[in-house]
Image 1 (cartoon, chains in turn green, orange):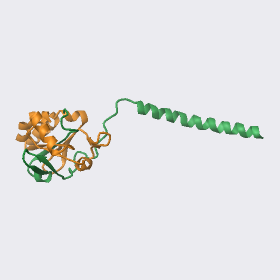
Image 2 (tube, helix red, strand yellow; image 1 turned 90 degrees about the vertical axis):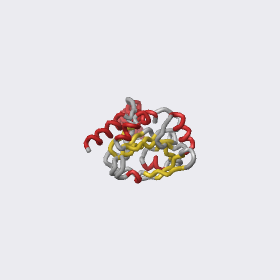
Image 3 (cartoon, chains in turn cyan, red; image 1 turned 60 degrees about the vertical axis):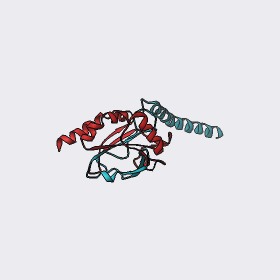
Image 4 (cartoon, helix red, strand yellow; image 1 turned 135 degrees about the vertical axis):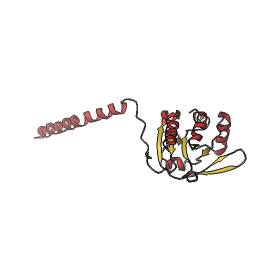
Length: 88
Length: 103
C-alpha cells in the first residue's frame, strides 16, 4: 500500500515537471531573444499633447514657456533628451 | 539638439517652434545650449513631472527617453520619433515642410 502511494506521488511529480519545464524554457528563450524592441509610447499620433509650463534660463532671467501659448500659432517640436552635455 | 539647430531655419520657415526638454536644471541647460550653439530654448523639467506625463520617464536612468514629438497647431501629435530614431530630425523637418506645402 505504502509503495503504491509512493509511485503515485512520483507519477504526479513527473507529470508536473513535464508540464512546467517546457514553459520555463520557452520563457528563457524569449528573454534571451533578439534585440529588444523599443517599448511603445503611451502617447500616440493623433492624441492631444498634454499642456505644460516649464522654464529655461536665457542668460539673465528664468523664462516660462507653456505648450498652450503656441496653440493656433505654430507647430511645436518637443525634443526630449536624456541629459545636458550628451550627444543627440 | 545640434541636428535641430542645423535645421532650425527650415523648421521656423514652416511655422515650427523647437523646444528641447530635459530633467537638468535651467542653468545646466543654458550652459549646454551655449556649448553646442543652440539658440532655441532648452526647457528644464526639474523633477520630471512633464517627462512622466508624456510617459517617457526611465526609472533606471532617472531621466527621459530620447523622444521627439511634433505637435500641430491644434495641439495634437503629428509625428513621434523614439530612441535612436530621434537623433535624426529629418522625418520631423519633412513633415513640417509637407504641412507647409499642403496649406
